[in-house]
Length: 176
Image 1 (tube, helix red, strand yellow):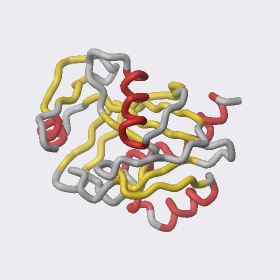
Image 2 (image 1 turned 120 degrees about the vertical axis):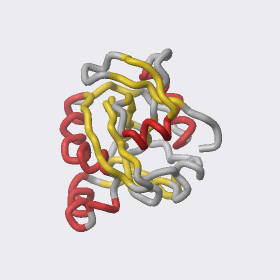
Image 3 (image 1 turned 90 degrees about the vertical axis):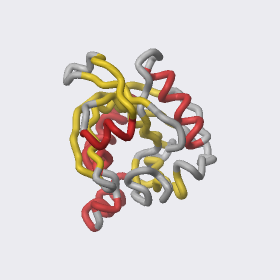
Image 4 (image 1 turned 180 degrees about the horizontal axis):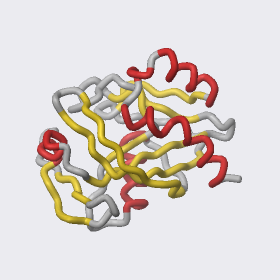
């Protein structure tokens, strides 16, 4: 992180209570708003990415299509769409699925404590990944992902391990 970035602090009901410098918030484990995007193709496969090694945390781990922290003054869906374009070079309609709170101790003595808004979309575009964000990607079906999560769960980010088992259900409900 070259410049000072800020996250939006929230209470457990997602009410904004302030902002805080991003790295400091992760060191202190402060609850903040985030979003995670899950893009499926027309074969019902999920697009996952391997986070770039240089990321300030969880570099080299596999995760969902895209994730980030929204600012507190723009609609979260708009920011999610912009981030999907910046990180993966993709544009598609995003649908809100659900939100949840999790707390996980991660590498570099950081703590992810997020109220994570989950969005789902469909695209058959091939990603054009930003190498500062991701260094690999693949489409994967539900059964193969379950096997990979069973064999080597710690090759995936903590939030992805929580969301992955239920994301196909939400995807199928949103796009029934």
